[in-house]
Length: 375
Ligand code: UD1
Image (cartoon, rainbow, N blue to C red; front, side, top):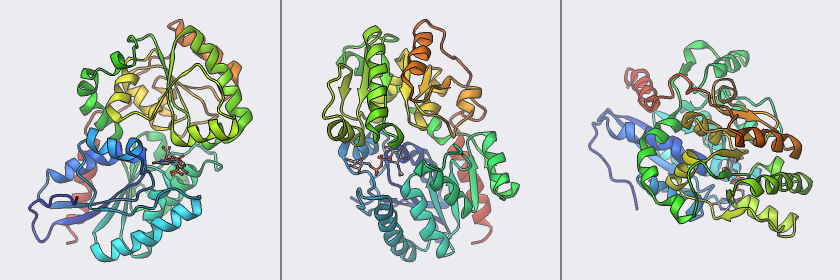
């Protein structure tokens, strides 16, 4: 079903917005809502189809009340080259047909980079939301996506001050960089009350503050059977003290079956959850263990202790100011930090500047000002 067209003037600023994978949907939602509220800006939403399962995609559109995309490119899964190339080729056609004034991309997934590459070659300026984050680890596919997308973007919208330094070091100029806060936290704040009204905990038979919540999907954790096995050993021990609920990403489900021969685990596995159920679970958890980027930020905004099962983070503000601790994937380190959190000695932290629910407005204000003059 196509998105309903709102009434806009002939001189309206036209933006093609792109979302492709699960972590994009909560970032694009407040931007689309902000555009929808303005008569002189309009968005054409392209879903690349990088994520396509009901649980990885469609549920987020309904939970976040995002209108159906104008177009779904249905690229699906594949190698990095296949996925990136498919989006690149199809996005070129979309941009040629739509002739937008700008391309709006969020985050660091393959779809973000591929759509940006199509745009820059056609002279369509790119607005990158969540620019400047760097883990310093070029083995992460997302790190390459971040560096390359930023390098060809016109507007660099950042979530934290450290990103400004990263961008200046790479030769960007201050007039391109706009510290606007975090659109994902716009979405969190506007949905928290509704999420908490859901019966998620009851359905899963959990009591507030008496469970841990786990997510795991990074190739560095799930693709190497020894690393995955080590993680499970530590997690099983924590699970003996406090139940761990584990919504399993399809990539991880496949790794458990193929690489560990369907390892026997007593952790409480579920299918991937929708946005509101997951937000509810995060907000009431004693402890969150994750290798996700976004969850490090969401737990900081919620004041919930987070242990990040990676060796680094591209989101240092969650460690410096928030509730996040980087523990890596060594079982002893995970266990030691989890014990601290269970004793109530986890990090509390504070919410970073401008993570206040108004980031999408700041972004669209800037785009409207910069693009309005050139029409
Ligand atoms: C992608 C992003 C990652 C993000 C993550 C969130 C890149 C490089 N990676 O990783 O940054 O944190 O999304 O989930 O863009 N699959 C399904 N159904 C789906 C989607 C995927 O079964 O709807 C399975 C497929 O077997 C696929 C695998 O999951 O091969 C991995 O999907 P893919 O999109 O390649 O990367 P993610 O690991 O999800």
